[in-house]
Image 1 (cartoon, helix red, strand yellow):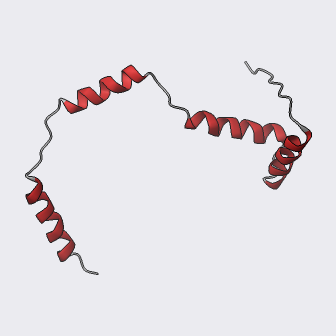
Image 2 (image 1 turned 45 degrees about the horizontal axis):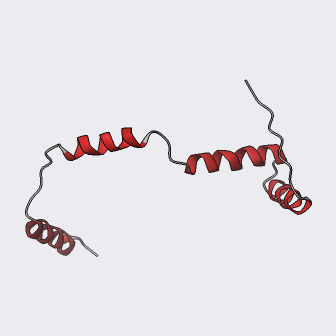
Image 3 (image 1 turned 90 degrees about the vertical axis):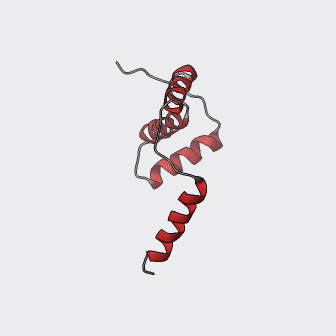
Length: 84
C-alpha cells in the first residue's frame, strides 16, 4: 500500500529540487523518491549483533595461508613475470 508524505520546504529549497528534477527530466515526486531511496541505501541495514556473529563465525574458520615473507615473495615473482 502506498502512503502519502508531506514535506514543507522553503521556497529556495523547492526551487533547487525542482531544478534538479527538471535537469533529469523527472517530476519532483520521482526525484524525491530517488533521493530517498539513495539515502536509505547508505544507511546500515540489519542488526549489529547479526553482523558480529557472521564475522565471529568467519574468524573461527581455517583458511589456507603461508608465511608472510613467502607470500610477499610469491607476489613479487608474479609482478616480475607479468609482461608490461
